[in-house]
Image (cartoon, rainbow, N blue to C red; front, side):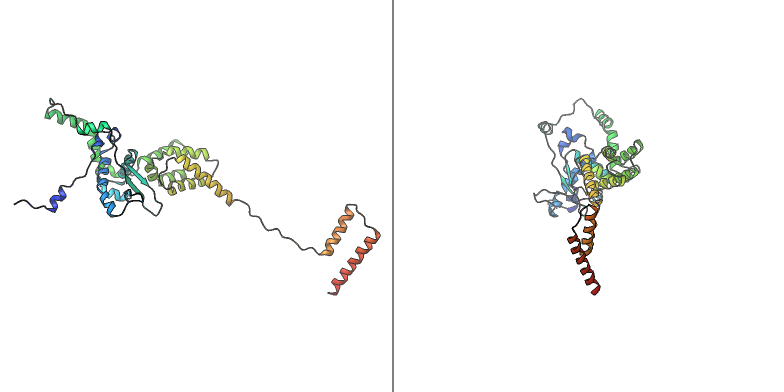
Length: 316
C-alpha cells in the first residue's frame, strides 16, 4: 500500500525558486544574498497578487506592500528592506511607482536577463578539480565565504543587537556628514532627514540637493526653499530621476506663486460729483488764469445764468 499525501509533508517540500543567472551574470553577482532571497520570495507571491487583482490596465502584475509589510514578509528590519529595494532597483529587478499620498506604491518585479555566456555556464557548470580533496574543498569554501556568510547572517538576523542600531541609514549618515562639512541650514537638513526613505528609494544624492540650494539661496528665502524641497520630495509622483531638474521646476513654481500673491491690489477710484454751476465757474477761472478774455456780452450772459441758478437753489 502506497503512502498517502500529507499536508505537512507537502508544505515541507515547497521551495522558493532562485534564478541561476544570479550566480553567473555580472549584473547580479554583486547582489547580496538578502536581495536574491527577497526576489525569490516576491516571485513566489505573484500568484497571490493575481488572486487580489493586483494588475494594471496592461496586465502587469504588481505588489502593494509598504516597507513594514515587506519587513514582515522578508523577516528583516526596515533599514534592510530599504537596502534590498535599492539593490533590486539598481539591478533592474524591481520598479516602484508612486500612486499619491493616500495610496500605496506599486512594486513591479522585473524578469532577470540572461546572456549567451550565462546559458553555457548554466547548462555546462564548471567541474571542481578532481585533485581537490574534501578537506581542501572545505578549507577553500570556508576561507572564501566566511566573512561574507557571517555578514549576511548578521544582516538577516533581526534580533541581532548591532542590527537594531541601524536606524541611521546610509542616507542619514551622508546627511549628517554634509551638515558637518557645509553650512547647510538646519531647516534643510531636517527636510532631508524627514524624507530620507524617498532619498534612498530614488537614489538621490544629498550633495546634489545641497549644491542646488546654494545656487538658488538668493532666489528664495530659506523657508520658501525648504517648502519647495519638501513639496518636491513628498508630492512628486513616480521616481525622481533628476533632483536638480525637479527642484529647479519647484523653485520656478514657487516664484510664480509668490509673484501672484504679492501683486498690489488696485483700489477703486472714487469720483466726486461736481455741480454744473461750480464746473462753469471753475472753467471761467481757468480761462482767466490762462489769459483768455470774454467779451462784455459773454460776461453778462454768464452772470445772468449764475443769478438764475442761485435763485432756483434758494427757492428749493
